[in-house]
Image (cartoon, rainbow, N blue to C red; front, top):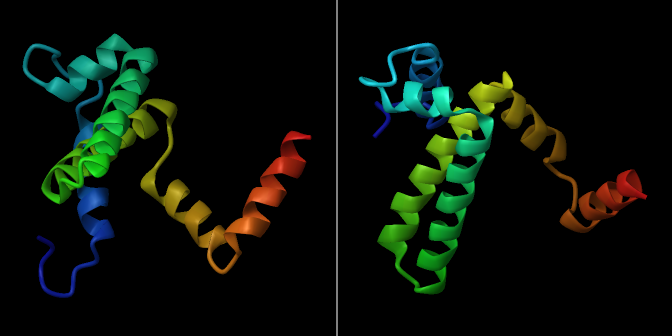
Length: 115
């Protein structure tokens, strides 16, 4: 748990620093280095697997498993972000940009971008 007064996002930032520090490491001694060595496709596959496991736990109404699978999903997302050269702040900035925008308006805006 975060220390008293510490923002929860600090946990994500610390974990992300560890993930980035493992890039180029020894795949025999670091799971994250092993993921990086397998490439973006494998990392993205792991994100998908964890997303599906989170969905299954939610459908089964298993709150404890949803928490665990969500943590796994966030972890693999952060590995994917690092692989793509993104930072948590990039995602936080996008969330902040959307803050206060209705979901309906956001979806309409995205549809216009696609059209």
